[in-house]
Length: 343
Image (cartoon, rainbow, N blue to C red):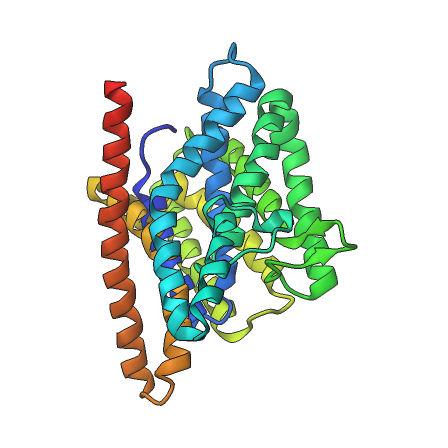
């Protein structure tokens, strides 16, 4: 299944909205769980790239090419987002200009995401741990997937996801542990990244093995109902039971829902197959990078406003900065692309 799947574009966009509301402490207090869905989707695409890779290309070259491509798809929007975040933090935490300048230099570890490697940085976007875990975990998962093939994806991957999620749940009682160290050696954000990517690799194998098995009308109706109930369950947990023992259950339910959606087994997933949905993927990336610091700014300087006005201001600032970042990032991408073509 190599054609573009509108379901994933729509899902990522909706997940971004949930994250935005989560970071504003509104409605989805357990919205951090959709980050695992982001990891799973990334693992799915990672495995698809592995299957399409040239088998004669050296493993290191193939791995580097994949991770660099993933980084390039983000960095053009990441850097302007981080710069806007630095400016926003001048108003969030007023300080001497020299202090601002010195701290801003630590943004380099956000531009080159190394947070889960333990580097102290100035992480203004609030999601740099996720980007860092995604890229660094890909450097581990991708070559293993290519080298070990189905042994890795069908046996090792599900076991890694089960045990890593279980370890986090056992030690912390929930999954929302983006930046802690276990035994001083294992970064929890990195563990989440590896677990999510491995689950995504296993998801890919499940999808490819089931894609030719089309359900009957009755089966599709049943799966549509199951999908509605499944997402309803996930949303209920995220709104009513944040940071709880139910986190792990939500992860397994989301895995099954992604399997239904990617294979277009329900009527709902068929309805979102449009060409324009590809733009939602870019929008979700830009919005994901451009929301966290605005919530911090509003809580610091506009806490006396009614919540409705705070929310309108929050979404207005996100929309404005996202437009700026989108045009700046797109322009930089095209400019660098043209220079490469003429070189």
